Structure formats: C-alpha cells, structure tokens
Length: 209
Image (tube, rainbow, N blue to C red):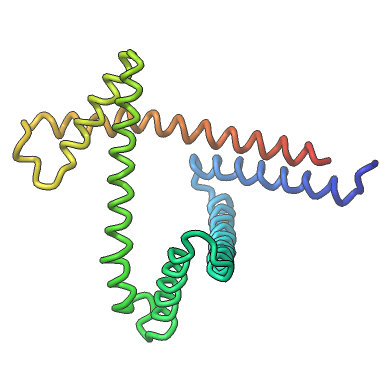
C-alpha cells in the first residue's frame, strides 16, 4: 500500500521543524544576534503554550481516570475520591477567591500539604537510593562501596542542624561531590537521553513514511 502524500509530508515537516529548533537553540547559546534571540524567545513562548495545553489535558485525563474508578467502585476507590475532593477544593479556591494564586487556601495547601509531601517523597528516594547502593555493594563490587560512602556523606551533611556535629572539611567534600562527579554524571545522562530521544523521534517519524 502506497502511503499518501499527507502521511509522508507530515513526518518530514515535523522532523525538519525539530531539527531546525535544535540547531537554532544551539546557535542561540553561543551568539547574541538579535534575530536569533528573537526567534528563540518566540520558540520558548510557543513551548510554554504547548506545555500549558499538555498540563490541562493531563489534568482532564487524571480527573477522568479517578472519576471512572470511583463510579466503578474499583479497588482503592476511596483514594481516588480524596484526590478528586482535594483537587476540587484547590481549583475552587483559586477561581473564587479574588486573590487568585495568592489565596490563603492555596497557600495553606502548598505549605502544609504539597511541601511536606514532596519532602517525604524526596526523603524516601534518598533512602531507596541508599538501599539500592547497599544491595549493589552486596554483589562484592568495590564501586558499590564508593557509592554508599558518597551517599552517606551527602545525607549526613544535609541533615538539619547537623553542621556543628561534623568537621568543617566534610561539608566542603559534599559540595565537591555534588558539583563535580555528580553534576558531570547528571549532564552526561541528560545529554545521552536528549540525543537518544532525538534519534528515536527521527527514526519514528521517518519509519512511518
């Protein structure tokens, strides 16, 4: 079956637009040309609009999933009911209160619900990574020992009011760990992920022709 011209032109245009945007953003990082800066500012504005639309679609989809779970009486439907109720309260507070985003209700939710919840998730992530490093160490690999040692140092120096308990050199070691090896590994992972996504997207677009 021969693909139609529309099915061929669409992926090609999308690939050209993605590649052009990538090249333009790379050029904008190393030049101050007004035309390039104006084009990149317009691209960022378009991305913000697309991001807002994606967030809206995600919220609608999330609401539909939880409402359907409550209507069907699925397992743990009460959790979905709590999510729907809290979301309705927050949205209503933001829409009804003249203060808008500065509403006291929204401030209370962010300060006493979202912030503690995020802190809890980050704390669990830290312990999960430490446990994963310990399991890695059980495989008798010396790299696991360095991983656990670095994680323990970072965790100990980040404890509230713990700076007085450790020697002055320990926080400096933590800063070096975060700024040098950790940041280098993170940038390498992000660069590899971006290139992999770019290659996969181009292969997907041209594979559909």
